[in-house]
Length: 244
Image (tube, rainbow, N blue to C red; front, side, top):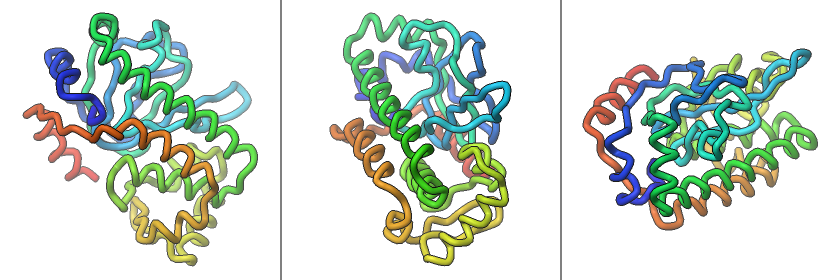
């Protein structure tokens, strides 16, 4: 919620509940009713699609500038896809009905929510192009850079298994590609995570898609990010960071 202006945040504060978001926690599921919207404060969530024949694959990620439950804001009661926490963290949960009521009553809240939805659509369409046209090395580098941006940290606590689900490839392919990226100096593999030790080197291995998506999300914080304090959320953050 750091992109929300202080006045907008204060209008939502009475309805916000801090929640821990464990790895692989499901925040919404295919065709299930949306009861809550989640504003991600720490961690990375993956929006996944699938068919009966094909396994899941990520179409977009959600981090600290975004929220899970876009369909509800647009007036749709059911989730079109699954949202899974790929990097654990914490968030602020609000009943769907309360957020829709506030968005209807306060144009500033509605405008900020719609601004994020636009950025998410840009990410979704660019990810589709990237998945169809670009190499696994480029796609994996893009994902790691975007995740580092959302975590505001160079260390990403994500597993090879999770990356194979996100990118829709075999785990062995993830391991091989990470080894190559490590050889070129962009990252260092750690137990249970990846250290993006040289962003410049990693950016040389990715495609234009990273800059296009990052630039769009940069528009969300052109007025600056805001630190909103909820005491219970501060305690929850300390607990979650210890679990990384």
